[in-house]
Image 1 (tube, rainbow, N blue to C red):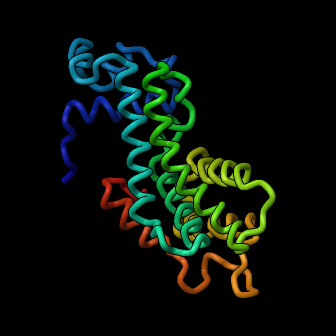
Image 2 (cartoon, rainbow, N blue to C red; image 1 turned 90 degrees about the vertical axis):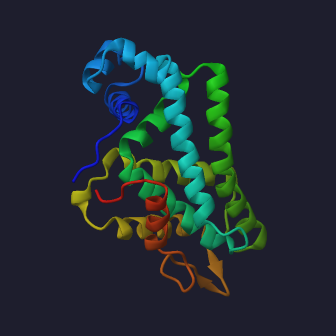
Length: 223
């Protein structure tokens, strides 16, 4: 039996869908209330202002992504394992939280200065995990790259793009996560003990473990 959403959760999901489809600026309060099946006054009761709601959605989404990455990535693991795990977290979460991913990726500009700073602070902590893995790999000679910062931003953008085209009909998302991890390892020219490092190499993280963490954080990975 399907669970019954609370009014607040119904409003949040409705807002996320509308913001993703039409954009924050083009989504009106009345439209949001009608889609959620509530009165406009009730909408304000549950969400505060429209910007308050966007801020809350973006903070929750970024914190969930950070929390998943922190649970999956072992701090003392080799940098190639951490990078592969981060890629899989990003790909699988964006594949299964597509509307949220679109909003997180496009609506930072819609927040006021104070709210934007809060969201950026959480996002920076997440990107810091990527930065440390890539920079440590380069320093250790496991990765060969000329511009760690550009590499980090490029890999994150590549993984974020999944939200814009992924469909469950495309097939095995675990295989997709592994393919993206392989692409990332190739981009940094990962090598250890004279051999190329692949996502399928012994000891590398696997999508099943990432999926379990996503589920534990309340992310639906069924479709």
